[in-house]
Amino acid sequence: MIRTLVVDDQSMIRVGIKAILDAQDDITVVGEAENGQIAIQRCRSLRPDLVLMDVRMPVLDGLAATRALLGPDRLPGHPPRVIMLTTFDIDDYIYASLQAGASGFLLKDSEPDDLVRAVRVVAGGEALLSPSVTRRLIENFVEARPQQPAKTTALNGLTDREREVLRLVALGMSNSEIAAALFISEQTIKTHVSRILQKLSLRDRVQAVVLSYESGLVKPGSRAPSSTSVPEAAVTPASLLS
Image 1: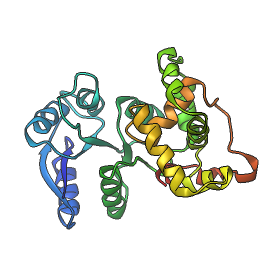
Image 2: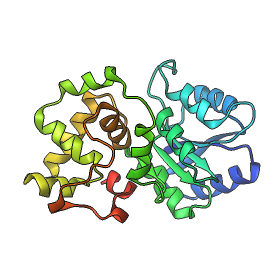
Image 3: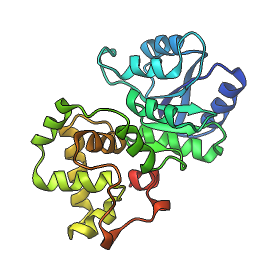
């Protein structure tokens, strides 16, 4: 069972999400919270696997709560994965969510099936962003912020092949597309991606993409190889999930 905590300052939203998730055989809502401060307390006592976190709330907003849950001063043990919920598809919220360590970003007007899928995908260790969030937003995210040299040295632990795989991941290519470009099996690519995430202490592919741009491995404006280029419509979270 995927133990889930629902955090939103509107009770009707919480009730609606709880009804959708509790109707699933593999998901259970173990608690609710109306602000970020209570969410942190609930996480300490309930230890959920995943938190659906509203961005804008009184007392303590969702971004601050996510930083507290996933930052350097987080509680010992395995931290929950976080999906940010918002009514507003605004770049700054998306950037801040990624920076806080969230594994997903979903609009509140998403279909119920999309919500359920998001919970399953993120609980399974992958990353999820709303379809409107493309690689362009990630490029803007890192382009607007100074590079961090300390993170650049982290790539030194990667092999040449791993660096190449990471570069192609950052260009929005799926595992199958990377495998075709490098003439190796898709399973081998999956193994490379898993090792990259482990070596760099990253939670998911979205964090890997951000780090690739921050470290200078990929420059804003770079595109996938022409022989295996991905149409703009496909350079979306769907590419990052596979």
